[in-house]
Length: 98
Image 1 (cartoon, helix red, strand yellow):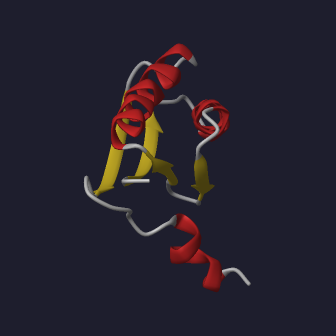
Image 2 (tube, rainbow, N blue to C red):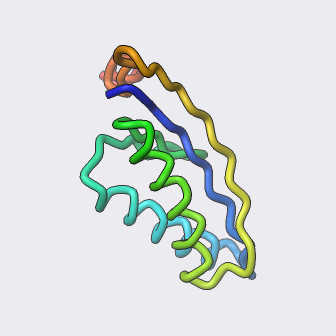
């Protein structure tokens, strides 16, 4: 695992219920990839291969648009280490959720 990505997808929506519905579709897509992910209140973290993660980040925008958002903003954080492993989600947060 040479990369970890945090993505916050912010679709334009008519109301909070619509916003949550669209974001839930994006999260369902991320979960369907089979990669390790962690859903937080503001962003979802995913870990895996850098190129695969970048494809997922791109597809998240398409998912939001297909779900009905006329536009979408995304905030992305990337930790990439081409030669070696990045810190895992588990190592970063487990001690805080025991």
